[in-house]
Every structure is written in structure tokens, then in C-alpha cells.
Image 1 (tube, rainbow, N blue to C red):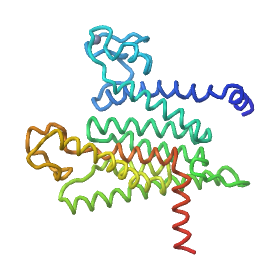
Image 2 (cartoon, protein in one colour; image 1 turned 180 degrees about the horizontal axis):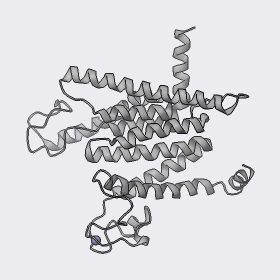
Image 3 (cartoon, protein in one colour; image 1 turned 135 degrees about the vertical axis):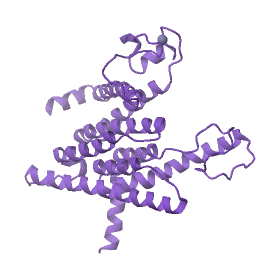
Image 4 (cartoon, rainbow, N blue to C red; image 1 turned 180 degrees about the vertical axis):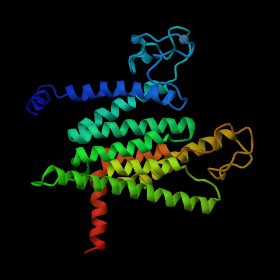
Length: 306
Ligand SMILES: [Zn+2]
């Protein structure tokens, strides 16, 4: 690790910049996955193509920069290119770079994997209102495997004990997070169904929180559900207000959020995916809030079991 530290001290910006660029490339790949996997198309072949069918040259396909240099229009036919592509690339780049700056190397590396899965799930959920099992179930399995290899991500390293012991402790943390996360959401979903008489959230959300728990431990799963809901609620207030202001409808303001839309004038879909808020909560915990949240739960447990 001496060389790594030498590079870090000589060029402090080297690794953050390298991980920003790496993240932008991963984001570019995520764009391809988000677009093609739900449509059942190969992510390998054919190469990137414009909507008009012409292949995109490598220099127009450079993450973030390509879109900026083209000013959001395809070179071949002038079609508008959605700003979501550079946005996903920039988001992934910024998250990777921040992971490296904020966390120790092993946690940062696992965090990059975690963030990639969450970003994929978020945009697929926005597009299709469903979460593919291979990403959520597969992500949970990857999380358990990563926990076995890197016990530090759960703070499960036991000093002086053989690696095997830390590894087992870490797997227990991960599986516990998986069970608590999916368990809470399962009961919330059941409660919602009884209260509202219809499906309030999907089964995909249940598995998603299980996966978040497998990466973050049970505290992270709890934070994702409650923190994510808070962030979601805070973001929904201005969105719902904006929609109410623009629709100038008969029943202003007090419309229940998830009511099926009766008037055709309301073009925006009424169902709002829950997955993106859960993902945001999970990522926020992993990157920023694991220490204070764990300390909080530790304090609560201390009061209860003194
Ligand atoms: Zn074109």
C-alpha cells in the first residue's frame, strides 16, 4: 500500500479524478443497461446506435463530454439526445468520486458496486414501475459475498482473530440486514394493502430493501425505509403542489396522492415509484449516515437493555 499512499500524497487529486472518470464510464454502461435490459435486448451487441439506426462514433460517445460537445443533438440526424444520459453518467461519476474520498478503500469499492445497482434500479423503476429480480436478488447475493470478503464494510473485523471469524460475523450482519429490510417492507406492504385495499408497493421494493440491508446491515435498511420516505415526502410536496397549480383542476390540492386518475387532462401518471426513494435512502446511509445512525440505534439499545 506504500505506493498507493505515495501517489496520494504527491497528487492528491489523482485518485478522486480517476474514480470520477471510471464512474462516468460505468454510468455510460448503466445507461445501456437501463435502456436495453427491460426491453430484453443484448447489452453487448450491437454497439451504441442513434435512434435513426446509425452507429455512434466513439468520440461522440465519450461520457458526459460527448453530449455537451454535441449540445444534446445527434450528429447523424439532429435528433435530440435526452439529458438523462449525461445526467446518469455525471451522477455515477460524482458518487464514485465521493465514495473514494469519504470511505476506506474496501468500503468505497463495495460502495461503487452498491451504487451502480441502485442507480440501475432507480431508473428502471422510473421507466417501467418495476424492479427486475436479477438486479435486486442478484444484488443481495453479491452483497453477502462482498461481506464475506470485506468484513470491514460491516465493521465486523475482529482484531487478533483469524480472518474467517470476521468473515462469518460480517455474513451474519449482511443476512440479518437482508431479513430485517425485506421483513419490514413486507409488513408495511401488507398493512398498506389492508388499509387502502390495493397494492401500495411492489414485491420488487421488498427485495430492494432486503438488498440494501445486505449491503448496509439492519440499521441501513431501517434508515432507507424511513429516511427514504422522508426524503420522498419532502420532494413530493413541491411536486404535488406544482402539479395542482398546473392542472387547475376542479378538485384542487386535496387530491389523494395515489388515487387512480379519472380526468384525462391529468397526463402525469399518478402512481409514483417508491424504489428511487428507498435507493436514495440506502445510498445516503452508506455514504454519510452510517456512523451517526448506528450510534443512535446503539444509544436506543443501551437505554432498553441497560
Ligand atoms: Zn441519428
